[in-house]
Image (cartoon, each protein chain N blue to C red):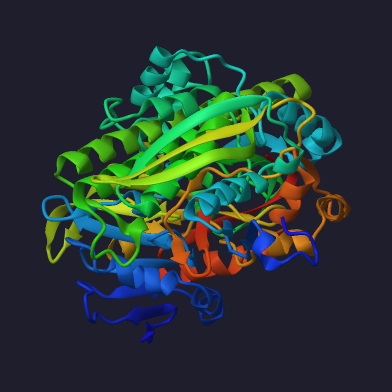
Length: 473
Length: 149
């Protein structure tokens, strides 16, 4: 692979062969060793060959091999001449992260952290095959798909202010249910309001370090030791079914000849298949927003019950890291409407963008980057520069470096629990095997990922947080 | 899974390492058999199918524009039945693939049990993908699949 260093932490695969644009990789030399070990760069090159791609196929510092598109991949396509691809969004549509602040200090919760975690574990359904507590009808599910977190707030899950502090205000307006299959609905009905399994988690955290006081204050992060709550999950089986359905629909409509990888199947954005997928994907995005809205509500209820209040438990933000959206971006001195695919990448809009909620508009949007289980997570602020560098995007997490199989061979869930306990971190999970699979050693070093992000200008470091209680699906 | 010392032809499938997800190869003397073993390989990533009895039956019928799509849709069926009917696959009976003018058809009887407290689940397969998917004929059939977990 012809990979050239073109700047500090910036590498390029020059345009060659079928590539319509170059591929740009944001990575340190150390992270690049991991990235080069799998097919991420080949995948980034394949993405650069897709019709209507604008500027470059981008690779974030946490990249690893995905299906078709790399995870940690960003690609934007012209709305008129470009395509939309389910593989550029991923199977877990609107997998994302929600972060709540509190007025509590670590010392307020230390004695009660076991109880808090046990209660959250009881209230928030999690794990494989675990259904939700709500019994939904099809018509209510359809309403949720159209209205997202708005529906949840109206039903008493959380507050109206939460919507303002959610990407897209918790509802993608393009959503429609006409292209949602019965199967997707059937998978969605039992799973609303559940965390799921795999890499999804819920953490009670404390602020360890603040790097940017102005942005931190704007986000409601005021002091070291302050307690936060992070929720990481997505659209569950419904989103996976939408991806599966539209990969098939696009194959049937356009065939698979000439695709270097069938997961790159795509449709012109303006075609009927492209538009149907976009509406169905938006509906799955809304399901995930409603899901995190409900879980956040239950967490607040637990805090209120256990600590006698839910002091200052305002939402900092809720970000999607698997999504495609139509956005305005400057390109070649003019404003263009582009379909920006972020797969395992977080939007990182800087000051001034109208999409950034008013309270954050002077500092940039909050960018939430979860670490692996038991390690640090980070809060960043979006930057103006990122718009030019990556259509306003940065990394989404740590990114795996070891297979689940290998992790199971090397680690035991109970030992991880004991090790975390020695470091003052409480852990509850539905599966010790799941815990072993998610061992932090199976992931990249998230500190290095955010350092690169900050140095390149994709997202500015604001605060570092570490867990005090971890719940795994 | 293969019994130690048994001839290689007896091996139904092999789980392969994959950084982020699940990957396996399934084998069969015929394509039908390889597809059936692929369904068991997928099940093995979530539950111990060998401990599942034939108490519940689901007849499945899928079509595909080619064998690859047929395989992805057949495996998606196992995931769908698990998530919506809480069905744990234990055995694949009478799987038959036919090539027709417009593509491929598959019929099979899936036998298993409904999920109960006594069952242990150890993984969550959420989608079957085309990533690195291979269907090869060489001394029988080998199919390779990566699943999203």
